[in-house]
Amino acid sequence: MNFPRLAACAAVAAMEILGAVPGRADAFHQIIGFDQLLGWEADDHAAALSAFTKSCRDIRAPEWQPICAFAETGVAARTFFESFFTPVIIHPESKALFTGYFEPELRGSRVRTDTFKYPIYRKPKNMKPGDPALTRAAIDNGALRNQGLEIAWVDDPVEAYYLHIQGSGRINLPDGASIRVGYAGENGHVYRSAARELIRQGQVSFSESSIAGIRAWVRKNPLKGRKILQHNASYVFFRELNDAAQQQGPFGALDRPITAMRTIAVDPKYTQMGAPVWVEKGGRAALRRLMVAQDVGAAIKGPQRADIFFGTGDDAGQMAGQTRNGGRMVVLLPIGIANRLAGISSR
Image 1 (cartoon, rainbow, N blue to C red):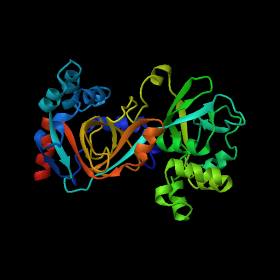
Image 2: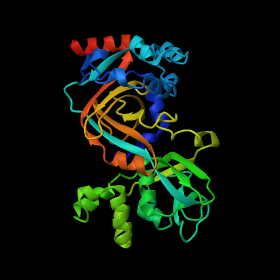
Image 3: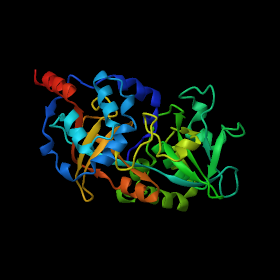
């Protein structure tokens, strides 16, 4: 699982890099053929194209504009990708690492009750990043109480904590309705992992540090658990998404809906945001799939690093939490850009 996602979801910063083509001087670009992509023929290219078109037109680099326009004309998906793109491995000598993230579902209420007592806050106006009066502990102790900032209250402090880490989620209400919330900002304090702190203290093993494991430990040790969660001074604020957004997937760094098992978070210093990326993930649940770089993450650093979006709910969370595998990622770039970058790399 990606620790943390929170700082990654700033849409403005992501949109600024859409106009640039990553091409770091320290990155070596190797062009390969589509016949060298393991399992390429068997993938559902139409599903990948559907995810790709959700954010393609946001790429401002001029080489992408005609490609993105053509993507929406009903072209055969596999033909489209093979006609307009070249597979490129960035830093082929680097070891790949794939992790996962998901959109949590929480139980909550619009009003505070004895059951639903853990608030999900909007971002305060005029907040100063790093304000010592707004650490997680200070907020838990009531620093923002009675200011009308509560979107909802949820029933589990650990679920609320992991909502902060993932950066978006769905809150299911007692009447059957739901609220979808997205990242709106943070308090500017340094992120520290509660799970890692529990492992460091010897309270749980690495295998017990899943969401379920941390939730069980905090329930058995509520006072200590509160302190453990507060070890992470960073705190995330949310915005309630509109009705249209409720019917779509959660929104990623490009402020576009992302797609389960088709969206990845990448390091935009190396990988073009919005680009198709062929993923060859090893491990027990191996993947050979065309995905799209539509999100970023504070822990996602390097040319062969990606976080796979597994979807919404507990099952997705379990799969995300179990994902930590090697493999290979290959970016599909417009032919002219790929040739230019490969030429730069070979000099």
